[in-house]
Length: 316
Image (tube, rainbow, N blue to C red):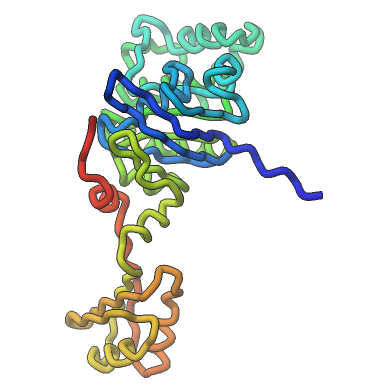
């Protein structure tokens, strides 16, 4: 008897949100698997925050359905709130409170017993790298530290799914890198994370899957590499030879898997017919043909370029 298929962490079907005649979200079908660090990409106004607010049970959909770990966000809102941690793009902090007081307050809101709260607060502070700031006033913390405190707050009840709306916005480069490292660690601990952003280069480096949304509609959802493959016409490989370039070009043009070869000094650009072709074929052909291969690298388009290609910058 085969095992039942795993329950997706998030499943939306035809998710729609109208404001009068304006569709902030239009028929969104999205699946996020357990354990994903999922990048939700779109321009400001594309519908990212609307989606996350619906998943966080703060906003009711006009049509369609969203299910989180088997719980409907409308019918089972209370159950959903216990298994998610939602960090909005702008959140208020009590600047005159100490860090531990702030987290203890939210621990009490989640009915964590007082005997257990001190350890829980200590654990989440260690996780986000704020242990040394336990007694500090929140108002004295840097913006980056306040963002990490916000993340500690949503971790206080040990949620299975994190919904993070632009958690790195307004942070300096070092604080951004620290935030991304924390998210990697949370994924390693088994959390499922949806992170929305328009800072694409960061998501490219940490997310295993992404969705691109524009004007309330889903444009792409799948692996990070998949979106690049979809947008580039063919796999491009660059090689450098220390031998006769023309002879190397002739060897490459003879390969059935090559559609185009362009030489520039000792560098050669090769376009392959498909993304599935292993570029070791190129190395084998050159070496066996007597060419002296000194470099081989794949030319990948980044998420930034993909985003510009698939979206036209349209927002609501």
